Length: 80
Image 1 (cartoon, helix red, strand yellow):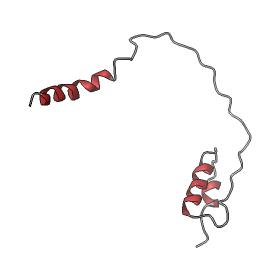
Image 2: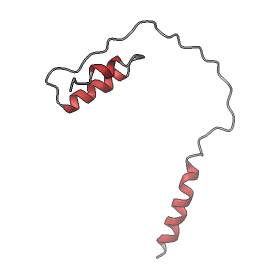
Image 3: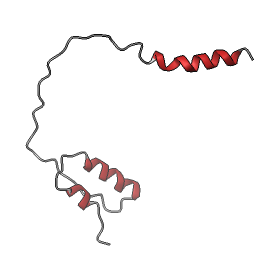
Image 4: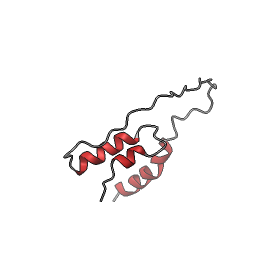
């Protein structure tokens, strides 16, 4: 029975340790803007005969592009 109060105290104090490494002050650092490219990445349709997992993986990979007209989504839809 002597372990229970210790465990309760440990669990109660555990969230406080997450803040232990946050600095109280830091120097500001200037960052440079990211230049956006003008080229478009190719969006591929899923491979023929792909199983469900392969289609989902292809869709997720295609969704990582900067596609603004939802071409990746349309290529993964069926006609049915």
